[in-house]
Picture 1 (tube, rainbow over the protein chains, first blue to last red):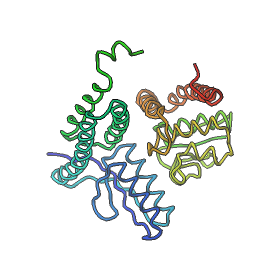
Picture 2: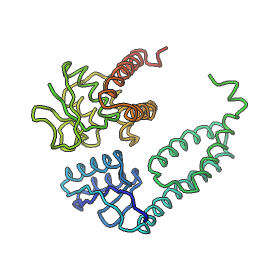
Picture 3: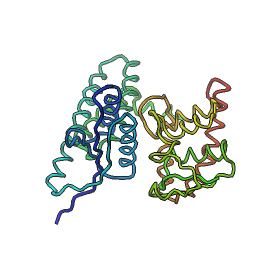
Picture 4: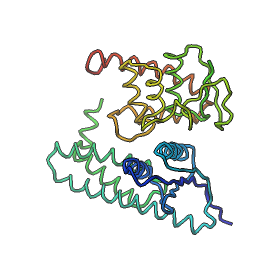
Length: 164
Length: 143
């Protein structure tokens, strides 16, 4: 029998006005890479960190005059869990594709701009990685594009000589 | 005084414990609980849901402790920025030290209990304080 994993859910309801807390919450949820199960219900695979992150957001919602609850749950079927994971993987895949495109485009840029873009994209790569619970194939392509850009900025041969 | 926080200490709680012991209550004793209901009546909770010393208005608990206890040392506020980014990673501050600090604390939580994490991270934060202090004094990276 296939068993499904544990998920942590945040259910929330925020007053429509003011819109500030809604925008902030939306931005924070997006950064965490949650799956939106329904209006006002989001989910992440459960671990100590994801649970804590959602708990703090629940407190933010309460403070903004809304209602919020934290739940742990298992999808009743493996198919439902697969669908959830696939949705999250697709969202990350889109972000990796965007990163791959930007890294490839930077190869044609002047050297100083290449270095700046590389720094920014490496930060972006780490941010995506932190919310990437089900790594899609696009992750490898993004890694390769970043490596190619790094090679253009600091060729491996030169790096060995100049490092430290 | 006794202080209580959630078991499974990571960067924000380790930093808070160091801050409390160094700058608020030298005799601080720490209790680790898994359920907020288990906080002893005589203990002050921190970095827990519902605690006054928690995440407030987008700040991490370390920043809240600084604010609540009126600590205005700029070195501590700079460390607060690093802890904020290590814990929340929301890009509010430029703190390249943050990912490294986060990884070190997460690794510690895997190899020992919470007492061990505090015992090892205390001297780390002492060092971070001294480095940050010198950097602020010099206006550049100290040797």
